[in-house]
Every structure is written in structure tokens, then in C-alpha cells.
Length: 136
Image (tube, rainbow, N blue to C red; front, side, top):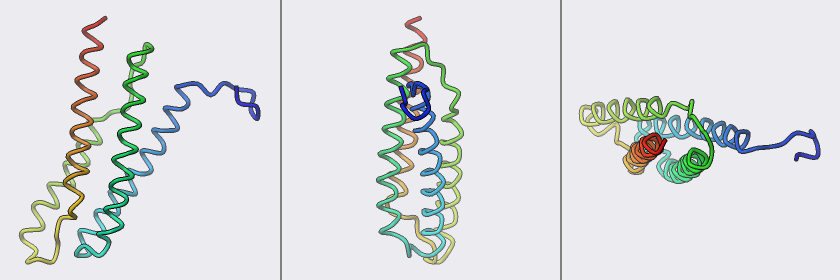
């Protein structure tokens, strides 16, 4: 029980906290990769660090969500497809713009790793969700 508010801080509240943190870091990461891309990789070292932080937070959030799914009657209202869609759209923009920019724009090195991580985490959580639904 939280001594300051007198309320229980249960798994649902913790998941919402993680979701908010992940959403904030998603925006930061996308903005930094976009700035890095359009600046000719001026922010390359910052993008690398932010990418690692983002992938770590994504892994923590997804792991906690799946653990909750398997331990409780959890139903996710967090639409992972939108994350994959946003990251895919950004990858397409980068992939189509870079070759035609005459070397002005270059895809940040870590962007491909972050993109693959987002798609991979989504695929794993979808598989876990289907396995849980079959178990019912």
C-alpha cells in the first residue's frame, strides 16, 4: 500500500507507469532518429545511446505485459500494431529518401537495430498472446 495516498499500487498501475514511460521514450527516440537522419548524422552518438535505452524499455514493458497476461486475466488495450506501423513508416521514409539525397541523408546505424527489435518484440508478444488464447 502506498503510504502517501493510502491506495494500492497494483500491477495495473505499474503497467500504466511503464506504458507512459515507454510512450515518452518512443517519441524521444523517433524525434532523435529523425533529427539525426535529416542532419546528416550529426546526432549519431546520441541516437545510439537513446536507441539502447529505448530497446531496453521496450523489452521491460513487453516482458512485464506478457508476465501479467500469463498470471492474470489480462487483456491488452495497448495496440502494438500502431508502434510497428509508425516505425515501419519511418523506415520506409528513410529507405526511400536516403538513396536519392546524393549522400545528404544517411540512415542512422542503430535505426535498423531498433526497428528490428520493435518488429521482433511485437512478433513475440503476438505469439505469446495466441498461445495464451489457445490455453483457455
